Length: 300
Image (cartoon, rainbow, N blue to C red; front, side, top):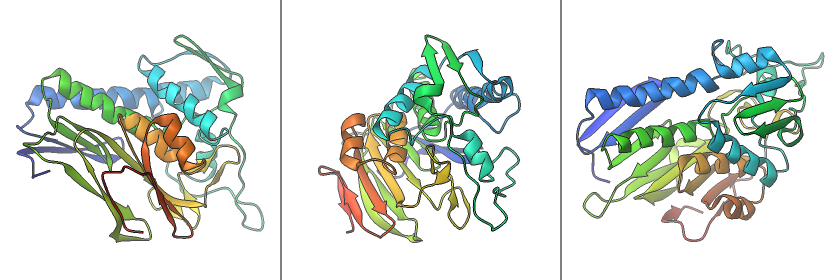
């Protein structure tokens, strides 16, 4: 894609956002986008004491009215839990806290006397939680964390705000989670390099997009020590180690984001079929696996 005519950039929910568009965004449009981000954060952030998530964590087992936008997000988690045998779960917040990724960002994991990590499984989303319409019932105390899909979903929501205000051609980028809309022959394709987590000055491939979403996840992002990072297996409470990075291309950023996390724990072709995505997976041994039909190149 040629350089856009206008770029709006700002920080929110702990990451850098950029919105590229053909024309500068009017102040009311940019304000509406930022208000949508803040509303999502007030509901879903486990780092805010005033969020819905924190209210649920304090309340313990019981029934809670869900935020209005919860349906698609939790549907995606249902699919990911099925595809990964429970490894991907929105109830993984306590496990992340135990590893030091807590609201205070202490980054000090719990360890035993010998220095080994102390981990514990998260409650099983498929068993400990039930949804009935707008109500979520939890049978166990839990801290919800939607890091596996929340940012992608929010990228979709911001893209929806832009479309509602008549900004049909745009690219929304939240820390590398991308939603591309309305790029055509006159604009060209968006070309994205896939950063190698072992050497961030290099790429393991490039992908091209004119519509849809690309999301990735890597163990060098949100990492705070040897073997300590945000991609946690809910069944054990421990960070995963078999895969270094994943990328998923899908119709929505929510789908691509959740699928990118599921690719750490399940067969890539199973994830691709369940979520309707194409993928690239970089394993810990340096091997690469990718979907046929990707628009781009993988440097195997």
